[in-house]
Image (tube, rainbow over all chains, first blue to last red; front, side, top):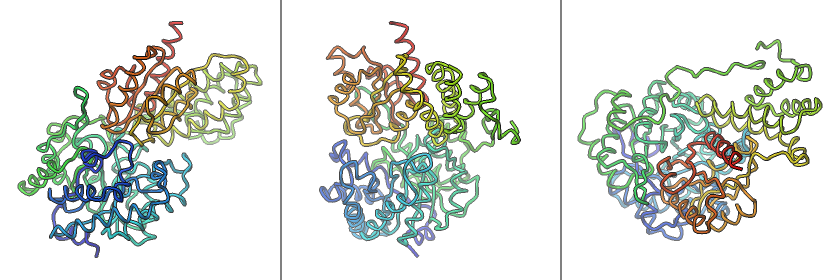
Length: 334
Length: 231
């Protein structure tokens, strides 16, 4: 059994990590620079990123390889370094996890290719699988326990990555970003995602949501997953609030206290792997861990409770309420 | 409405029905049918500009409304934009030849320091789909590149995108430079990207913040109409 599945059988919940980008920028990553290049150029800082999560109590953390597919690295003319950059991302993670003295899972982060897949866009299924496979094999060679497909919008891309992970025999989990009126950019609802997951031959260890809009929207998505029953553990990895602009500075408005509350609500609502995304710093994780440890599990939050505690939703409906928007009448063809 | 009418013959429809059919075909992303309908209207001596505005742009406006309202999503909209572009391919040389007014030209790019491009690409595709001419500068654009491009291309609109809280302030650098050069008011400046909001757009001096690609198209049309009215 893989290390994550084992941990999930032993625990009622596990804490994931926070933001990668926000933390790396805080350490001096220049905007426009590829974070993945730091795996080789600034390994100490990448190690510090991982340690930040581990020391804050994370049980699983993502490697610095989100943009590690050839199509993303191409933007930095580093498309020939896919295996190397991913392998090193995982190697640094492996060392950090092994030095922690407890069971910490290294999850090889796999983000979207950035290309739109056929038939709407130009990326073919075969090329997508190839790119994901190349990244996956680098991450596994570097010692990742599992692969974590994250921030995906398109079901086609999700399936292509799942197929690639099967090809390299990697255990995996996957999350999508529900950032458009409660759906992914490509229109996938929380309920749609569960149906899609059920049909993937290479079943993930867990599935869920990451990034998106704010904590309220993310919790609504979790409640949507639960509606459409599945036996797999659910991931909740939401942003630390919503970015706000004040006098030339931008910060996420989610305080550590709020993120603690979010973590508890996510668990009550059915999530088992709980973490943060953009804007989530180690202090947020500490607060989340504390809240999870010191609060009893109660019944799932209602949408009204989520709204009262976390703020309003970005849209009135997330496509799962059963009230389908009226379809436009057509003259011919359905 | 029924399946039996699937073999409907476009050339047998009168003008009004054909235009309504084009709205449907755009909505369904049927590129072949759109090309055929454009040819039929040209044979019927419609002006290219009328085909563009009354059939294609109007049809895409309907698509935009349903995208805004969460009835259609990106995949459907891109198929519709693809169909629109097929029609435009036929019309473009004729429009240039006839000296018909252009809808407008946009220079678009992700700001310096930012390597995200999906949202920006969607806006570019939808703007083209709506009949605008788009010059895409790609990612990571310093202020000089934006300014050179808007001048060289004689653009009407500058579109800037940022997906990072660390890069969105750069939009202000670009706008401030335009002000310093005295050219700010020569262009419509639209900004967008996940971490932005209306308040931010106002604070940095953009004309408008556009929440998504559909809003970008509507806003661009709105500002272009105002610009024409001023002339």
